Amino acid sequence: MVKYQDYTILCEAELDYLRETVKSVPAGDVVVCGTLRGGDVMAMMDVSPDRNYVVVDSFKGLSEPHKVKDNGTPHKASEFSIEGGRPAFEKNFKRAKAPLPQEIHQMYITEESIKVVKDRPVSLVWADLDFWEPTLSVFNHFAPMLVKDGKILTHDLDFSHTPGIRTAVHDSKLPFVRVEPFNIGLYVKRS
Ligand SMILES: C[S@@+](CC[C@H](N)C(=O)[O-])C[C@H]1O[C@@H](n2cnc3c(N)ncnc32)[C@H](O)[C@@H]1O
Image (cartoon, rainbow, N blue to C red; front, side, top):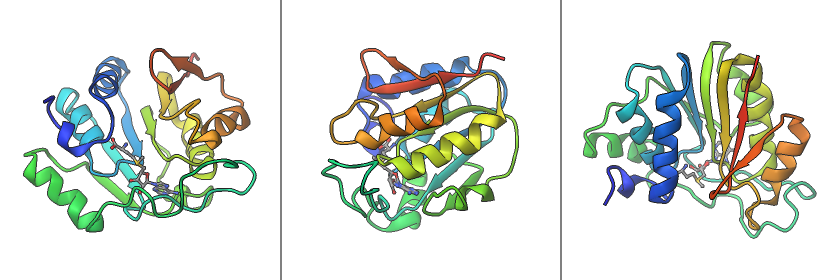
C-alpha cells in the first residue's frame, strides 16, 4: 500500500504522477480543487513541503450538473461527499500524521465564489471536480496566476462519466493535452 492511498480514490500511478509533477514545477502555490479525503494533497505536501497549499472543496460533494454541458453524466449532485464534512477531512490529516494545508476554502466553486482565492503566483493547479461549471471556473480564475512553466492538471478528461471536463477544456481555449496512460489533462504555461 502506497503512502496516503487510504485517503484518495486516485490509483497509485495517478498519485505518483501528482508527486512527480509537484516536485518538478517552479516556485509558487499549489491549488487543489476537489480533494475528498485529502490524500492527493497529503502526497504532494509530502514530497514538496516548502510551498503554500490551497485547498478548495465544498466538503459536501458534487454541485448540480449542467443540463447541456454535463449532458450524459450519470453522476448526481452531492456524490463524492465526505462523510463528516470538513472536520472529517481535517481529522484525516491528523490520522495520517500529515500537516494541514495552509489554506482551506469551503465553497461550491462557481465563477463568482472562486474569486475569494486571491491573486498570487501559482505553480500547479489540480482540479478533480467532475462537472463543467466548477472546472471551467477554476481554469479561468487560476490560469492568469500561473508562473512560467506552471501547470494545470485536470482529472477525468475523456472519461465517459464526466463529459463536462472535455467541454470545460474546450471552452477554456487553453491548449490542454492528455497525459498517457491516464485521463489526466495537462496545460503548461509556456511564457
Ligand atoms: C471525485 S472527488 C475528488 C477525489 C480526490 N481528488 C481524491 O484524490 O480522492 C470530487 C471532489 O470535488 C468536490 N466538489 C465537486 N464539485 C464541487 C464544487 N462545485 N465546488 C467545490 N467542491 C466540489 C467534492 O466535494 C469532492 O470532494
